Image (spheres, rainbow, N blue to C red):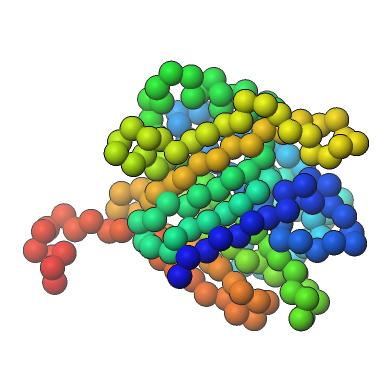
Amino acid sequence: MSYNLPCDWRSGFVMDPTKKPRLGYLVWFQGLNMVDFLKQDIKTSTQYKTPTNYKGVTIDPTTGQLTSTGVIDSFSWAGGVSDPLCISAYISQENATILKNQMMGTLKTTTIKKLAWWICNFSLENKVWYEEAWPASALAVTGQLNAPGGKDVRLNLATDPTKIAQNIDVNVYNVYFEVVPAANAIYTLGFATSPKAFYKLKWGLQVASDPTSALA
């Protein structure tokens, strides 16, 4: 089973209380030899304030604001244990500058040491918010940027900024990346199709050190 979860990123930045679209947040995106970057420098309001399955998001109990690295535009996964996690998100101008500088020339490493996401949706049938996708076995996963053929590194950063709204002069930048699991790392990814239908799937492979044990 494959998963394709488009999110309303503009509502993620500027919430319309009359709408309840799917919302996604890039909680962490760190690696590529960047020290403690990208930063969690985006604070946005969210209607879903009580996550129960994923404990990695920080929501201020007083203001209801969520702290994240970016707001997700789309999240997809073909469903296989070695298939890449594909994420399109909008990040701050400061983080975009940091990432752009790191991408100049040839990347010295494609290692992603900390990746996390949190996607929530609203059930029209049950009239409640629920968590739809999140890292289930750890607060974050590790991996490598997907690079088919060893050269086509799947990391793209928009050169031009985008306003979060026509009447708000705040610029953000789109980033698209694909991450495959790290070697010998197995994670559990959480998904849901409704507030009562939660399930978990494996992502990653364990490579046997003894070739004969892999055949057992």
